[in-house]
Amino acid sequence: MNMTMYGRLCDPDFLRCSWLRVARKKGASGVDSQGIQEFTRSLDKNISKIARSLEQENYEPSPLRSVQIPKEQKGKFRRLGIPTIQDRVVFQGVNMLLQEEWTPRFSPLSFAYRPNTGVSDAIEAISDLLRSGKYWFVKGDIRGCFDELNWDIMSQKLHEWLPDEPLRRLINKAVRVPVVSGGRISPRHKGVPQGSPLSPILANLYLHSFDYDMLLNRFPVVRYGDDWAALTRSETEAADGYRTADSSLSRLLIEINTEKSGIGNLQEESIVFLGHKISADGIDAGPNGWRRFAQAVGDFKNARTPDELSRARAELNSLKSFYRGVGTVR
Image (tube, rainbow, N blue to C red; front, side, top):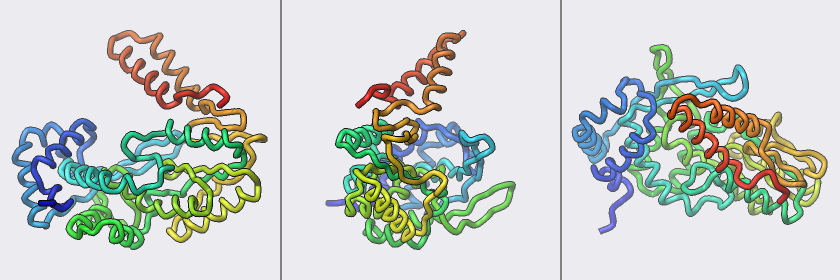
């Protein structure tokens, strides 16, 4: 007998699989101050309680704990909404189900938040376009992407993509939870909370129509979250691509960040995309990448303990993977 997606979510064994992913990521506690270790001490009881509440279709997500973390730009911060451990177990499970169902339907040039894809794959796609002789670029950044997603549009897309009504109701609850900051509960009116296991795949769902608007108009946009770029053969095509992108995103009630967006010729200038410097001559690590590499080499040489050595080696391996194959003309 086929089990619905929501039915699978209610299965305690499935919730345990979700729990293992949450536990591996560790992470901070939510508004209830319950940490990973405390949740683990009563694991069977907690899983049973979650499964029972889901089966009765009366599960209510808790408010998010609001925190700010610094961005790379000095003085800039990103606001995160931290769910409780219990909510992370539930919505990591939902994410697992949605990834399985939706990933094959997403654009092949959307590389963020998907299994077995990453920045290096997005850069390889850009490299393929360069090799085909496309040197004019259209580059864009979506202003406050996660924070600006419209709830009505999101609900409409969920209705189109997800026939499982109980699961759809649960996701809509997760999207709309308030935040707690300074002891006060504040309602939210738009956006998906950065920090929730659901937010990345919901952002990909929301931007799916943008991906295909571009593809249908013959602008193969390479997108990684809210960063995107497309390469064309002429200035006219690049300008048309920018207008197409602006129009598509406007229909989603999202704005292009004009300070980080525009068109140009890679034979005359380079751009930085996903931490990589891209020009007609090839692709290399961006300025921040070389600084990080120099720092990691220094940390490796100056490591005083096995733990410091292990961390430095891990950072070097991470950078090697991130900048796979750069430094050469492609």
